[in-house]
Image (cartoon, rainbow, N blue to C red; front, side, top):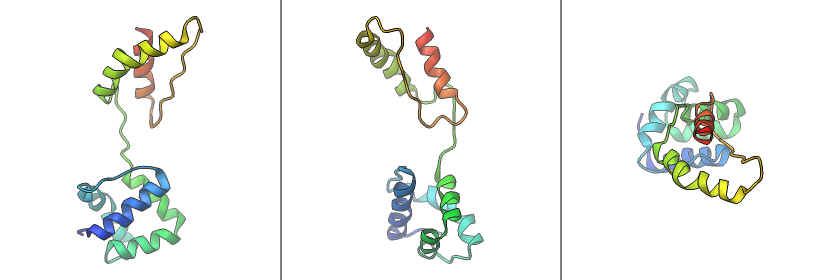
Length: 125
């Protein structure tokens, strides 16, 4: 089922408000592909009806956020990030730390840990 520009704004706004995730215009296909089954399961003829149900149903909100979240984890997942980390960020952190025995790095969005361990490998190297 095709999503209209107005409906896309509603759904992408909902996602941002409830998860902080931004889905930019041009990703309508992603919303359509990932939410079609939920629309059908909830007896909705369009995304506007679905949005109205979504605002009232906490369990449905959770399902939508889960459906629209990219659950992917890989070793050294984003090459540009790890290049920046290796060439710029880690050297700056080491310089700032001086003689302190510890550098702390927080890894968000690491569902099974490969990203965190990838950072640890860079630090150990």
